[in-house]
Length: 214
Image 1 (cartoon, rainbow, N blue to C red):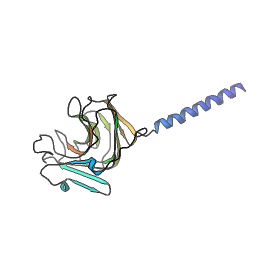
Image 2 (cartoon, one colour):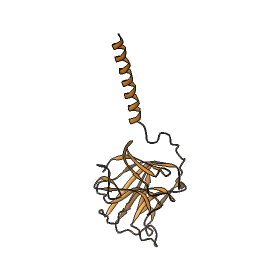
Image 3 (tube, one colour):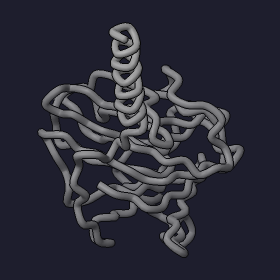
Image 4 (tube, one colour):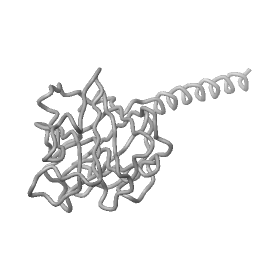
């Protein structure tokens, strides 16, 4: 009888552990965060300075479509940066605390060598995080592999920046895919869209975004 009771207690403990493990594994990256209300004023568009916005950007049925060509001009006539069409989250710059970007992205087949999301600002360098697409795979800058097989499908991207802890964590479709030390505090903000890499591969680059939240 004592053996049966012990077995039952062990079984119940294992069941409880499994339930807690399932809860942990199914935790959403937004748990514990409070969404900040956004208006169109928070979505600043950056595009080649000599081209009308509607020739590089469209917004229909809640989807933002952004595209750029490798031989486009930068976003400012005084800039020497690569061409871009990006959403810059405005009015929510941060320098401390824990912040999160969430958005559903879509990258069409053929866009390669383009930054699709980033954290701009750092103590050292211009950016804290760059997520680029190469041949359908997402990489941290041009190095570490973050995720694979992302062409022609919607994916949920969550980026958590713990400034005080000095860490950045990337989730794809609710699953943690990458984590790295940041590059120090600064005037920080989130961006998404398309920004050509210094040694870009594609002539035409595009990404689409919807349901963007901070």
